[in-house]
Amino acid sequence: MATETAKLNFTSHSDTHGAMLDRARWAATTFARYDRAATLKIARAVAQAAHSQAARYAEWAVRETGFGVVGHKRLKNELCSLGIFETHKNTDWTGPTIDRDRKLVRIGRPAGVILALTPSTNPVATVFFKTILALLTRNAIIICPHPAAKACCADAADLLAAEAVKAGAPDGVIQVVREPSIPALEGLMGDERVDLVVATGGPAVVRAAYRSGTPALGVGPGNGPVYVDSSADLTAAAARIVESKSFDNSILCTNESVVLAENAIADQLLNTLRAAGAHVCSPGERESLRAFLWSDKGFNVGAIGKDAAVIARACGFTIAGDAKILLVPIDRLLPEEHFTREKLCPVLGFAPVGGVDEAIRAARSMTRKSGGGHSAAIHSQNETTIMTYAAAVSALRTVVNAPCSQGAAGFGTNLGPTMTIGTGFMGGSALGENLTPASLMNWSSIAYPTDERVPFGNFEGLTPWQTPNSIVSVPSQLARSVPALDELALLREQIRSLVRDELKSALGRT
Image (cartoon, rainbow, N blue to C red; front, top):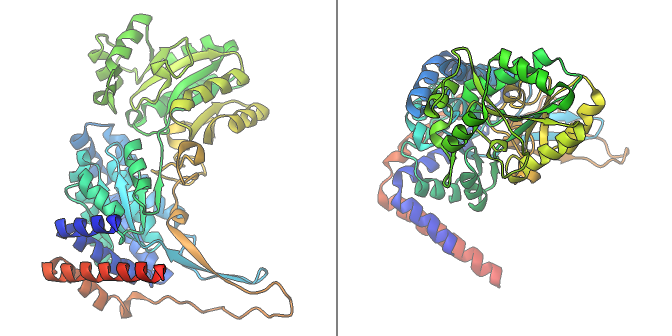
């Protein structure tokens, strides 16, 4: 009963959040009955509205958080709005789908109410991304933003909510926590009215999501090794690596962390990287950088998402005006070497290796501390090397001859475009793929026997769903009334819940 009591206390101390959850439940129940055409109409309208404001929210996010590059955030906002919708619009996420050969019918079942945690590093892009996935799969979503990005995220969520309702969605299908806090987050995650938590954030937040008792999809940190062998086009590889590491000042967790260069081409690659826009740090600059980026308390968050020139000045040296990243030659490829760890800023390690076997050992050593299950990259023309490397490194996605920041996130590759990277079992996550609409729903199956003597039914043209015109009005009015519920109504519901739980417990003992 301790857990249930905590849930009741949360509701009684936060009427606003309790009302929000009730609205979301009614919205989810209503939305789950929409047909595919109505669902796509809503998702399209929201994606278009988000895309139209991509530049404004990019500027706002950088101003509010201090992280990243406005132009790059604008691109991410565009890709995570219409880009996401266009990617998934042709897949039927509602059903029913009929497989006559296997005598199966599958019916889409939304998760229900999704609590979506969004980070400060990619704030509005993640709001856009998770909301559109939720709408495509007929889920209600509550956005809980990082406190450092709460203003831009709340405004973005309000925009999307208004557009969704205008397009026919039930009121309450998109909501936002305006004053996020640890107690509020813990209460929401553990509330029985939440069906799924999708956590994008630091390890502590993800662990809390898995401890909440609510089904959760969380992700771990990245720490991407990139191997460049002697068969690679070095000019193209250098350009792609610098492009990736400088994209949004390396705020994406899919960015490269250390270049592992085959000995035969290491010196040439170093010069090619310099020509592509890398400032190669001297031993003295490396030590100044080490002291600035790390302390006994961990990584310096003041460096996250900052320009290379800003970081260099803070360390007491200057770089050329066209330099985009700081490249740091290192001797040790061990977890104890700070520069082999994740760095959400345009600082990139560089180390020669004897070949693919040594590159694999180095990559596995790097990701032993953090980054397991996340992302890796390779620049090579040798398929055997590529296969050997991808099969052995501790990563569930290996990007070949492309920028890892964008490629592992599904932009410019055919991985699912995402702002949430599953790290699988090796990374402590229940999600191994990139988060897509498929992650936010289950499918109910109607199964006939394989016995040929039993005929399969004729389900053509049948659907359990309706257009919203006949069902949206009354539930929407009820949802709009929820914020006005008085304390007595809330108390009654709490008492009913407690009685139900006691009866279940008593029946279970008899």
